[in-house]
Amino acid sequence: MRIHKSIGAAILCAGLFMAACTTVAEPETAEAQVPKAYLIAEIEVVNPEPYKEYVAAAGPIVAAYGGKYLVRGGANEALEGAPPAGRMVVVEFPSMAEAKRFYDSPEYTDVRQGRIENAISRFILVEGPAP
Image 1 (cartoon, rainbow, N blue to C red):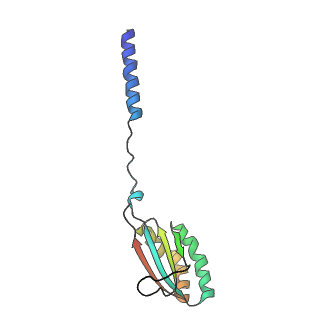
Image 2 (cartoon, rainbow, N blue to C red; image 1 turned 135 degrees about the horizontal axis):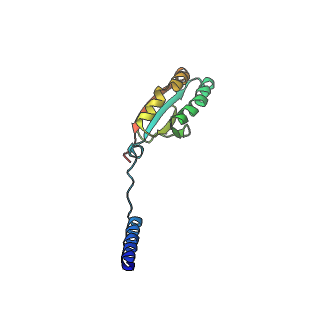
Image 3 (cartoon, rainbow, N blue to C red; image 1 turned 180 degrees about the vertical axis):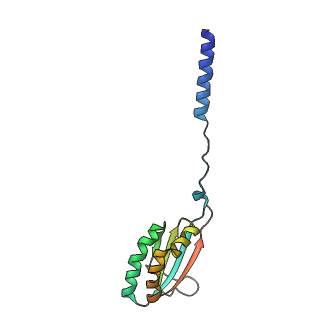
């Protein structure tokens, strides 16, 4: 009886050891497999004072939709082709779908008019590389 208990204990310990040493790869989440998206904007401000209201209002909406400013104005230089007409803005979003949700959202639709009325802009949405 004692031998059987020892064998049983040894088998149990071996099983626990094997289970502890075996790693199971966690499946990647769908979110991790989706490429990020980048909203690239070229903005020539024609009415600076009212445009400031747009900038202040747009920032929190961008953040609410998972956006993160990578470039927001600052110096720029054309290395090839025509120079930008004004300031450049680059916003990173978790996905193309999330960037479109931001752009079409009721919150941004209300604010966007402030940009349209006070600047000449070009917005381009670009999908980043596959993760």
